Length: 72
Length: 338
Ligand SMILES: [Zn+2]
Image 1 (tube, rainbow over the protein chains, first blue to last red):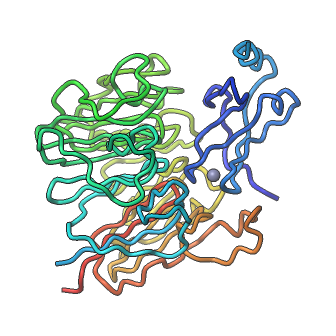
Image 2 (cartoon, protein in one colour):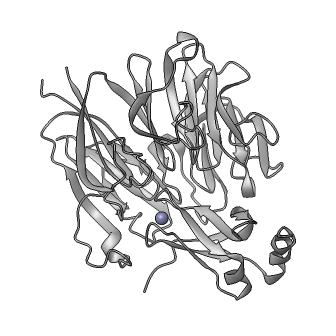
């Protein structure tokens, strides 16, 4: 079983409204990523493309609306 | 006397300064014609201060974080311009920004940050080398990914950048856009990713987002430092750790420190320099920053395969001047045998 490296609140992520992804620094130098769609589907584990570390995104469903509003 | 820079670890943006972007699981050596005195590691960039007042940068420079103009990456260590010809005297690095101090006690900043870490005022997100107003009589610069704390020689503590959950020891806004006085009569500080530790005469306080609670007598503490998510200190000649232990970061609780010359902590790994000049690493070593270990399935290794307990990365064949842990990188400065 893989350990979750850390728990990070959604407001600590940087949201890219064009790519519709959330990013947060990984200790390897790359960034943890998760898409808005994944969060809407109830997925909450952000992964790093360059290493095996994962973080759990801490959020409530109603937190997502403000990011949806940034899209248009 | 000749000096050599040995390094290994994460290298996706040329942050090891070796002219390529392949991770290294063994130390790679470079002979220098100058003497390093400090190494500062950002997310994907590195700055090395020399005893003769130069700073050499390498790695990701897409936001200007190496202090060198108009190149997206700096593949090999390259001198940062001396502003007005003044010697650089100190250096620090955060996620994508750097702080450089010169002999006139001017503090210069370069790079990018959206949380006020540049210290230049509201909505200043990116800059070439720019002076932060004031004269800075600095004793210690501490940086984490998006925050800065500076302790002056007079004991005053200043901070700016991300203050989420009060990690800068300030109750005010989440983002501190310009240097703000936090405290006075401060002895020592350490800044982790989401919390800070401030040591004063008779008190030690941990602020920010963390589970760490400790009641320590500062008089008994001879060393205190942080990884991104853990605290490590020497109390009565024993090394103790507290905080995140997802990948063996807490391995050395209660280790006796008799033969230890220096401890340096990276993002999620630590380095120990012993009196016999050998260097060992512990913690999270997925990028080779804790040396070699066979990983069968590199695409999705298990936690065990990327966790190191005490792995010797340097055998002490030459005298070590100092060591430095970075963002999944490890650095050792050695000299010729005298
Ligand atoms: Zn990573």
